[in-house]
Image 1 (cartoon, rainbow, N blue to C red):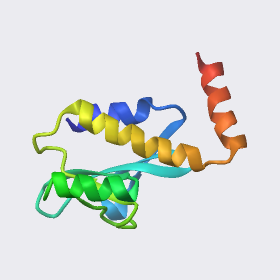
Image 2 (image 1 turned 90 degrees about the vertical axis):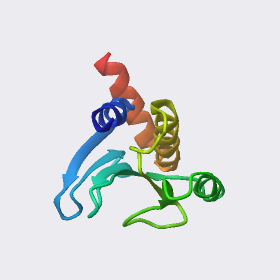
Image 3 (image 1 turned 180 degrees about the vertical axis):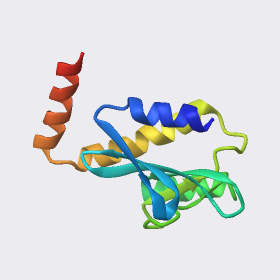
Length: 124
């Protein structure tokens, strides 16, 4: 599942990634801003941390108790952590990832958004 999530994050328009050694986390960015972070906690549980609308975050945490929690290392109002090895579908996880990506992309300057879209056209 981890490789599938990494591949999906990398496939999003303008996505870049790096490894944050202190957190033992692979971070995915668009326009220099993080939209996803994959890591493993001290218990060996694999998780992905994503940006999320606060109202949606509360709903998800209520529906998926102990699987979706407030974001590790992040603002707990705007970020969620998802233990993706739980019984969650790839499609559901991809939906959460693209939602996070879109929240970040929409906050970028129009100039940066246009550069990302233009670079995508050039690379086709």
